[in-house]
Image (cartoon, rainbow, N blue to C red):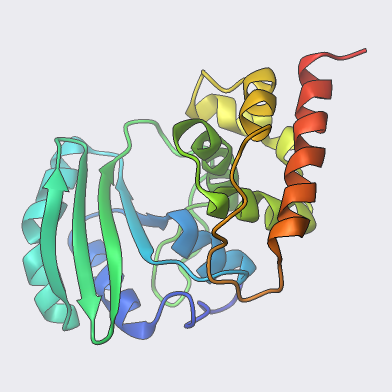
Length: 218
């Protein structure tokens, strides 16, 4: 884990909003902003994901969001919502983030590490497990990018299947291999570390074969 957030990924104004939310309700920063801002510093993200484990606290966070935004000098508006997931748009000067307030009923795989820049961030184990589940729920090149850089950091995806299963019982290496056959590699997210679409395509194809080998051992 980094000693400080990469401010290119999560600027100070966005961190101020996260701190204001966390001062009101126990929640932690997850998703791409947490993975890149606090751990890998490999790409930019336009998302801020705040996870609560208690439904009442989630409702409180939604109700307190305008006050938290005012305290942080941000402009927010609710885009859409459900009992477990509210999406807002949060603007800080010339930069806008999608802000997702999520009620996550499952407990953390690991306790969050000590706060970084006074922000509570999801554990790397939770981020790794969740990232694999994203391959099932959406077709976003950024998720494949994240898996590549996690592997470069020493965490190959097939070794994290057990973590993903604790997040989503539907995770299956055979299904992942099937999805990877046509998983998009463009458009790439805005990168901080060099990566091209052809390199990502080669990684996708190699990962597909590795997942097939896990699904069909021997």
